[in-house]
Length: 137
Length: 65
Image (tube, each protein chain N blue to C red):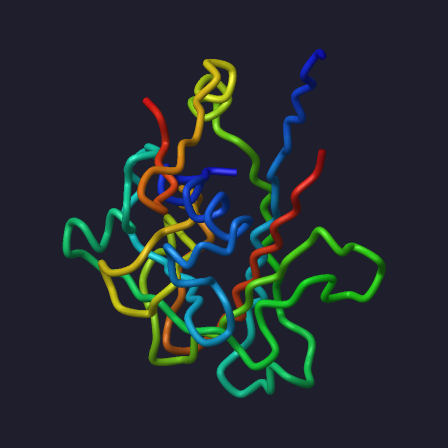
């Protein structure tokens, strides 16, 4: 996974419970999408569309997310983040996405960033965006 | 005593469920589902292989360069 440097720090911090970072829970977590396909680098701290002031949006979690073992099939090491982008939101070409611990653009920590084209959203559609993260040995 | 190293892997799936504006996304099926798996990038794998370590300094977890 395209884990950022600070994302690695966050995971280490959460294991210790040292409170160094805001946790990526239902209150704080957000999925962000942007229209910039600049290559990923571990030192990035926000979406590149945020950094370059083009089109980007972070959206908070749907009720009940993030959820561990969301399909109740015993996948205790799988966490699902889910946010719904309504008809008036994020109407641009989705070229990058990331997981954040705040909905405020350019703020907080970016756990990971992935550059991939997920399509072009318009006002005639609403998209439910899900990210499943699995940690294995 | 020998020390063993455990290498955890993080992977995932990004999934976009696309609905028309007049659909109820909580009850209806999406018109399209876009799914993409993702994994460690080559750059990150190189960093892990280089043995990048974490340190705790003043209660802060720091990536040791």
